[in-house]
Image (cartoon, rainbow, N blue to C red; front, top):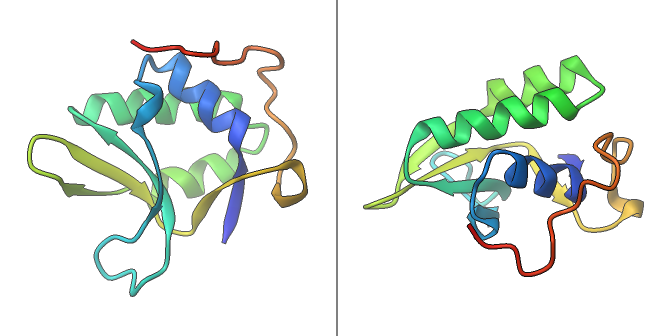
Length: 115
């Protein structure tokens, strides 16, 4: 399971102008047989595409960005859609990270940010 820096994911969510509550951790999609990954709850596929562009621009590893894009799957949730990334989790702390911290630096999501 590949782990991605939480700050990097949160920064990409913020930069893509998604609601901070759009991050869904621990999702198990079709044919995942109980394995868990992270996803985004979106109203339109274009919102997830914006997230992918933002996170790909921030990743220092082009291969990792390609793997993330290739992993993209989606399930309908009625009025919204979850776009999820099998094989990827969000690291909860620096000890869990497989990759370097966010290259976006101190561009943090402000406390209490809501769209």
